[in-house]
Image (cartoon, rainbow, N blue to C red):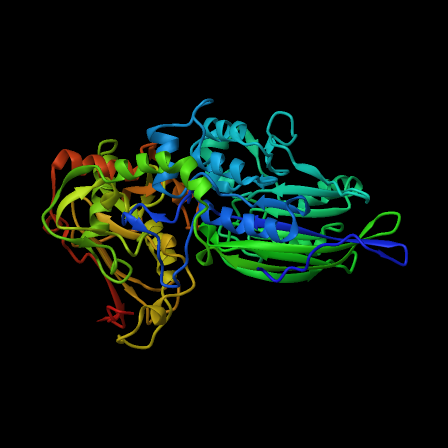
Length: 571
């Protein structure tokens, strides 16, 4: 079905040949079924992708049927237990226990994974939830560069050796090394500081690959780190966030890398190792279970196994149905989450949409900022400013009855609220960094969204809001990056450099996520580990009615040389 040639054990001039198939997923982010919990319907996107482990299971079964299960391995490159209401539910609402197995663990066990690397989001709910999840897995959770602070040794298994037994021929030993992201030390500092440390991928691979190689005929790395060298961490840690290709280039003895974290699709990429001159195969399947990577390794035996050729492709989960075995196994866990997110918590006097929040001040984002600012105001006498990003372009709260999923759709990440102290000069620097989100233009347009949006993720565009008085400013995108914030005022008065604010942010930003200036080193005024999404839900429950008119305003504007920039609605 997938164009695979059947494996045969043949005798050719005294040599034996064998093809091993290694499948890989990554960044599943709590997607069990092809379901959008925020919209309460089957998942769909502009490319008509499908998602979920139930679909991955069908692809895996078909590959195994084509080549023989005993000729396959199945890996994952991390970020499994965070990202959907299902993931949140089984971490916070009905937390997993020794007897209550996480649905993602149950599905991966049923599918028959060989090993998985730790992702950074595995740490979001704390080490107790992670360790419980780990114990529930019937395969190892690997992280060679997650080290115990006390012992300096890996806190999780660094690697595993899997033996592929073959009738009438020598066994094949496959070494699988797991590497996670050094950014965990920043992003989840509250959970790991003083307990775990996260050195670089290259450094730890250089340490561990020789040992793995000595025990293996084939070495595959599952790395929760993007292929292309980049980092959002600045100088907060001395190691790059994304460096899978660098690992392949600099660490001898690696045959392939299953890449994760970057949420991009790499069907096949070869990198030449600078030490050995040998090609190393890289592949990354698209996130959420939209794709399954399929790697094939042709090997030849003459006293020992030698890799002759390798190749990879990605298979789309949209081409298959969900595995009914997985559906039957976990439909009740799914149903609990559907009931939870559809619970009614209040009403809304008019529809609120986040679709335009990247280009204009909207009630949807002002609502988030208002709730954040109210909470911070309880802990300080300083004037309060709140910052939040337009996380979900599709978020919309309807007029009429409002459910948990309606409000949760505005805030799809499991962030907690932190309050810090910033001066006016520091706040201006912060907003300048946020304004990198836009491309430089020569006039007010009209433009499409793509024409004004730079290559910056939505979650790194923070919008500011003043609680007791308007915080007003313009973003002039006719100007170069670093000189775009104009007319910054609080309550109609220019913000002085030494003026002090209490600033509400999420824990990702306060920990240094996005490498914004000043925020990570700012004095902390408030940190009670309150989940921002739950604060929004609780606010609606308490108020009973959410009225967009209460959050209408235009405190910030997108301009070009003073003229309002027009971004077309369908852009």
